[in-house]
Image (cartoon, rainbow, N blue to C red; front, side, top):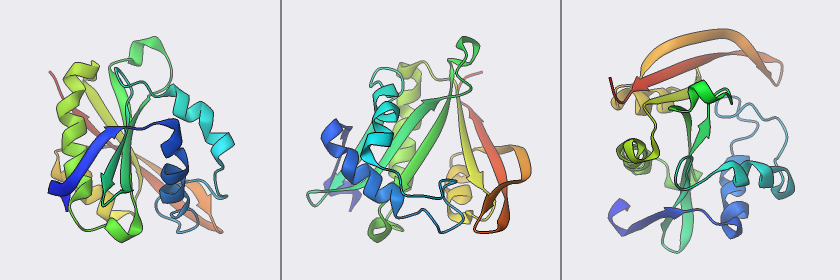
Length: 168
């Protein structure tokens, strides 16, 4: 599946497909902290924050459709943290388990030096074992645990902070 895929910078025309993938995970209690579906209008500012030269938003096309996306976002929004970025990755439910997550995360890690990113962070609910395994595969370690900081559908959830130094 990965060999017939194309990874490219997302365009505004991709935003609906990006949100379809994202919104499919709302309400499952372990992937995202959003509780209501996100609209295109709400996500336009988020989309515009991504810049190919520093904080990319990539889509992976397979079979003529967007099967997954990955992005880097600023961490904490202050200049001293410019070399640190949060990585987010979402895969269409029908494309999970096919190696897309490993492919995209490796591609992003490889791009980080040219993006001037030295440290990557992932914020993952502790129940999301698939994502924790994915990040751990690439040498991310647990750098923090925020116990029961999220409430979804009446249940409390821990947030695990995973980190990886890309340069020393």
